[in-house]
Image 1 (cartoon, rainbow over the protein chains, first blue to last red):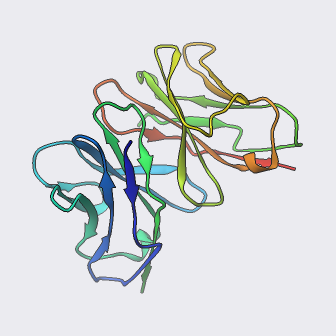
Image 2 (image 1 turned 180 degrees about the vertical axis):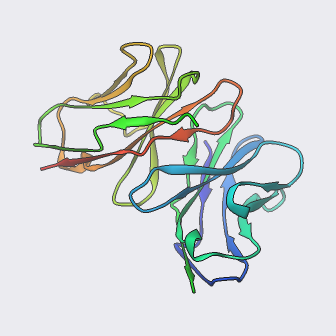
Length: 113
Length: 113
């Protein structure tokens, strides 16, 4: 069965600085990997995905993520953080044989002015 | 842009009562899901549904839960006899046949008193 770990409950960065939100995964085969963002009192909003191909994927709002198979990681990154990026970020994984996704526990990103 | 909708946005019910949470998935999607999130914590998979039947369910999805697609547009989650611990945000999601990512509705906050 697939699983996801987000080792940091909280990430704090200053506006304009680069940000990284970490995610590691475990699946039996090749993974499908996703990042979602949740703003207060809202549903989950899809940011980006890795299915196959280039290890660096680009998504919405200037976010990108790097797939690293040897380290089983899929860290979310952004070169320059905005205060409006402050939210709860979830990494999710699905393997080729399963229809459902498994989510990490979430990382709360706070970007301070 | 098409989106998943959910009603009601907030449901308050007494312990032991039945509740039905409603979702309208994106119109050309064929895969449907329910998740729950307790107090802004981890998003937990409940059930996936395809071709008018459950394709996968988690250990949370016990006999008290059921899902149904009563017509061509709605997808419902029923909890037969609610417990205090059922209080959570319930998210519906849908996915297109050729897509990998799921799109989430805004959620229904269920409060069991």
